[in-house]
Image (cartoon, rainbow, N blue to C red; front, side):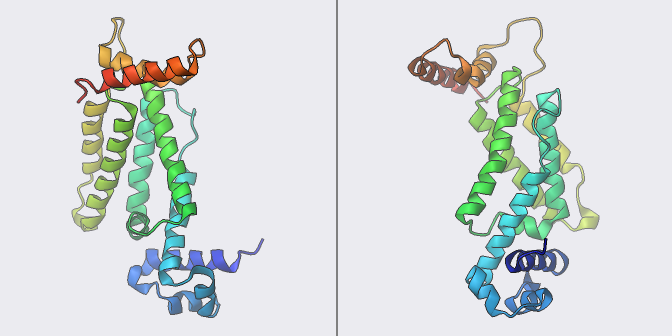
Length: 230
């Protein structure tokens, strides 16, 4: 199937961004490389910024498509680590695109793609919680992982490649683990916070309770999890 004019323009703009940097992505250069007239860009994207927004959306879609499918690993912590490794690797392999993805305005479709990626992270965190390995509420864990991962990539891509601290991502991951994770469950009963987080992850599936009771239980467990959480 032949690519559409729109997809061809996005691909060309993404290639110019990756190989020559953001200054090379002009309406004239993109139109010339794609073999179309410049007005086509304005008709399809409104202006150059609209084209860049589409490139960012395409970048997020490519990133989300690379995420390993859920359930391919036995250890949920390893699954979470695999997602971290993918995130850092994608950013280092596509520095200009990564910057654009996190600075460009998001269209509704682009935001939906971002949300689908966040949903994968949220699900992985939930699996860790259900395994009894999470020491903080799930939402806090998702927010911390997202902030740390994005910050680490930005820090690394700002460093000259020959001076890049290759250990930074691993050190950040280890710091996250100390903050977010408990040790693997032993025979003894876990502490109340870890137990609350674990039960909270399973609360939506407790069909023995009514919806109102599940909501009340979830609220109680959230309060326990927040109390004395790091």
